[in-house]
Amino acid sequence: MGSRRAQAMPPPPAKPGWGWFTRLRSGAAVAPPARRRFPACPAAAGGGGEMAAGVEESDMFEEIVMAEERFHDEGYQEGYAEGSHVGVVEGRRYGSLHGAKIGSEIGCYLGFALTWQYLLRKCTDEKNNKKIRALDSLIRMIQKFPYEDPTYDKLQEDLEKIRGKFKQVCSMLNIQSDFRISTESSSLTF
Image 1 (tube, rainbow, N blue to C red):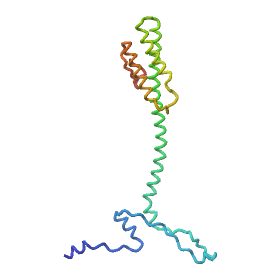
Image 2 (cartoon, rainbow, N blue to C red):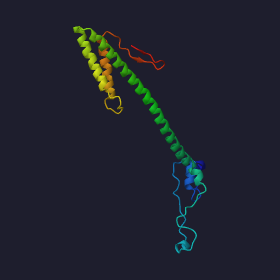
Image 3 (tube, one colour):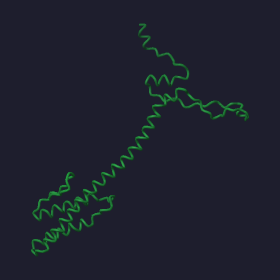
Image 4 (cartoon, rainbow, N blue to C red):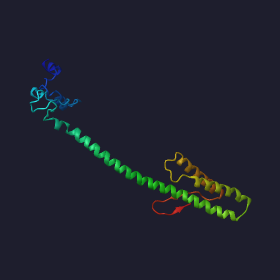
């Protein structure tokens, strides 16, 4: 029965003023006390004292206890600055690469359409008129494409429309519409 009573009793109180530190060491989530100030010196009120009213008390354990938080904050700031810099560099590199791929694709479509338009205009068949109109439509879509405005809301939609029109033209010309850009070599294949 004596052991039950010992288990049910709370631990003895800590030293006065050290309660927050004891709870911190025990793992309880507790904030350290606010910084205390020295009381105003009566002599300072009269103007003759050397101690100012706003001087803060220095706690000898405060530096140790708050070191983890201080290092965490410093690490966060350094990491945020480094991450911002690396993010901008990486974003610029990715944007340049992706923009070059889109530009290469659109340029290839335009060259394809202009070449076939030239070849089909030499022959004046009734069958070729429909193909020429489809090629003209593709060329107009490519010329209206906003190359210099990456913030254009419908950029991806317009690009998909151009791709669809290109596939339609390839189908009309009985050509396989397989556009691939290889990063290993600079050759384009159809």
